[in-house]
Image 1: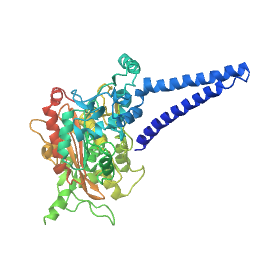
Image 2 (image 1 turned 180 degrees about the vertical axis):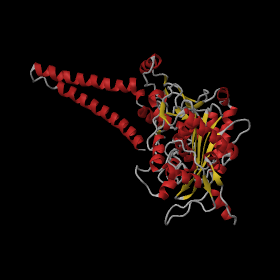
Image 3 (image 1 turned 135 degrees about the vertical axis):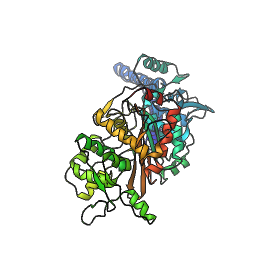
Image 4 (image 1 turned 90 degrees about the vertical axis):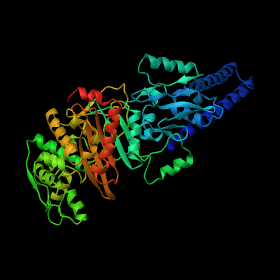
Length: 523
């Protein structure tokens, strides 16, 4: 709201300044006409002053008449307060935003005499595309792409000619269209799969970091904003303005076990441990660590006898907490914290070109930590926090060649590697273990017919309520073209709640033809 008030204040100040300048020039002419008693030199000087000021006024007004379209805030305010539609703000057509298939995601449409920014996919694109409104300002990609959409971008001869044309021909002015990497059909599917639940769904192309879909829930329809509704949304306890994909941070839970396993492989560790009914002793005064089956069976009055002796493959497939507690002790805090830092959990993700700002997660500080904290860290808890977008990028690296790419939102932007998570051989080993998770383990709800899917479930403890349901996955194998992260706040078991959402998204990606390229290539 502060930006809106500043835009309005700037417009008012401009009008007041123009009026004062006109009055001042008029006064100088009056004074000049009465100065015949003063010498000729003084008359010449006093006569030049109003002329100079007059031309300054002309230049000032010409700036707004010719180049007012360069000021996005100025045009926004005019759109909101021009019932006749005669001002420049209602003649400037902001550039269209298109999806990867050329489908409109945002465009200017006439309503009465005004131009209204319109979003045909309604709430499903809110946190990705955002909104551009005369009263409420701009958000998300509408904000990040403002220079291009308003025709201020000088990249290329076409943009320069468009800028020059807009300066002299005001009958109808146009900004530049922008094509994003996302698929509108995936956006709509992901939004429906969330079904109003609080959380996030994001998918990227593991080969280049292209963002294929990005949905945060809950949201709202940007086509239907009013002051009353805006105020109610601001005060809503579910925070519908929050982009949970890029700004929400969550414990990764058992999805972090993929990175723990990756570090073990890099160090040549492939131990076997016994998971008994006794669980894992976390030290004096600390409760024993058990697997989720222990608690589920206990509620039913049954006894969990443990998984028995497990190797790394079996432990990841069963998501065995006790095994990874042993493995975490064997690795030590230095390696556990180090692998989280290698994945970049504690830094903001830089986009490849214009993109949504992200919030950094968190990693425990370096140094020795207690046994109980070490064990919690090994299963993705303690001080570990990460955004869903970050989880998707990590998943893409594990499912592909070990490289994390900067997220790319605009189709014309070049691919930009960000971090080397691991070597291609280790990534392939982890990917095969993640396939076993979906085929035979806790992630079976992510399976789809005829397609090899890899993934990992997570049930992340939440201090303020029920555990968050988490799932990460990629498809198809070999040669994945989509990597997904799903977080359902207070959803419970990731394999039961989050994995089916990923399956629905994989199925939609297959239906629109994304898997065709992946089936033809390998990692």
